[in-house]
Image 1 (cartoon, rainbow, N blue to C red):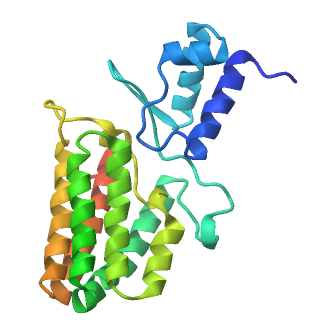
Image 2 (cartoon, rainbow, N blue to C red):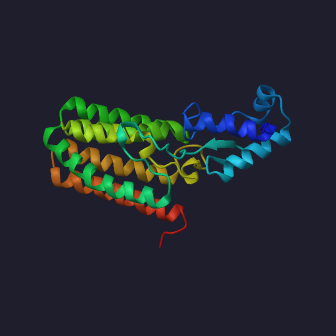
Length: 233
């Protein structure tokens, strides 16, 4: 059966979001650009965006446009690592991360070098500089967690983070909300402060404090996930 114009547009945009051509948090092309590229009407474009919204692949912010969200993982995950599809699976992923990333942070405090601290600082600075650009902030968030894993001097921790990839960082609609002044939202400011606490404990060589700071950060992430899904207390 031949696809309708809207279904064809949905399929094309879905493919771009899932394969990363339009990164999570990135703004989709404007209605005018989509009309010109696909030769369809404004009504078709709006119907396609509505369908993608229903699938949880895009979030539309009034006056700003539509943004890509973290897509569902395919059955074949890189490195054989399962990636989250549902809220329950994302909770389970955070429970897993609390375990291994807390230990990675502790080892990083023992084995860290000035070069590794510099890598964390670079990721933190880029995260703060990203402001309300969600796709960049998400990439920098992942870069920080990878830098901590690399600082542990344990290749298995690095492999785990790399296998999960940036999809391990949640991209809820709330992460796309900018502060009134266009800078970091309150949510992202809290994440930045939690990252900073992890970095400082590692730099101080305090393994217990580093593990505790990472555990607190990821526990807070789980609480934010529950609150943003409407299931928090």
